[in-house]
Length: 278
Ligand code: SF4
Ligand code: SF4
View (tube, protein in one colour):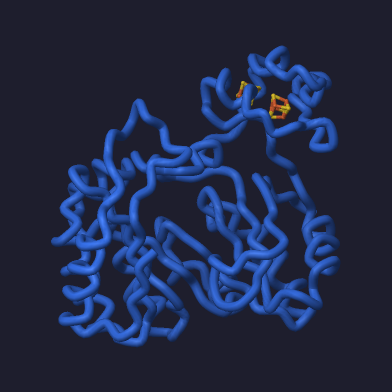
C-alpha cells in the first residue's frame, strides 16, 4: 500500500470546511504563490543533508541516503527550514492510510469529517482515494481544499467519494495568475464550473493583496462567475496577512477593513448570497 507525504495534521479545525474537522496537510505543491504563508509545504526534501547539523536537539539524522526527522525530539524551532535550500525542511511524514486512520479514530466522536489540504493534496490523488474509501466507512465527511490545478472532471474516483471541495481562485486574470502562482488558471476556472455543476463546490476563496493584485477586478469577475454558477456557493474573501511569507518574494501590506467591505459590496451586487470576509 502506498504512503502519503504529510506535512502536518490538525486534529480539530473550525476553518477548514463546515463544523469541526480534522485537517490533513499534504506535502508538495505545483504552485509557488508569492504570498504563500506555508512555503515549507511547497517542495519535497531533496535528501541533501544540509539541515542535519542545524538541529540542536538531535531530531534530524541520516540513514543510508534518507534524511530522517524524529517528531518526538523536535522542538519546532524552525532552524532546519532556515538552512534548507528547498525551504521545506525535513519535518514531513510518509504515512499509510492505516496510520492516518488511527489519528482519525482517536478524535472521531468530536469531528464531523476530515479535510485534506496542502500543499496541493490532489497531487497525491491515488492515496486520497484510498484514504477517502476508509474514512467514509466511519460515517465521516471528506472535503478537499485545492488550488484547482488538477482536472477534477478526469478524477472520477476522487470526485465520487468526496463530499465537497473548497477551491482557490487566486486571480481571474490569466496573466496575473501566472505572475502570482507560476501557472495559468485555465483548469482552475474549468474546475469551478465542473464542481458547481455537480453540486460539490462548497466554497471559493480569493486572497486580497493590495499593490500586488488587481483585487477589485478579481472579486468583480469571480463573484460574477460564482453567482452565475450558484449564488449560494460560499465566497470567502481573505485579507492578505504578512505572516510566515517569504519576504524576498513579496512586499505587501494587509488590506484595511474599508477595502474588504467595498469588495463585499461588489460581490453582493453581483449576486453572491454567501460572502465571508476573513
Ligand atoms: S524545527 Fe525541529 S527538527 Fe528542525 S531544527 Fe528545530 S528542533 Fe530540529
Ligand atoms: S530538508 Fe532541506 S536541507 Fe534538509 S535534507 Fe531535505 S532538502 Fe536538504
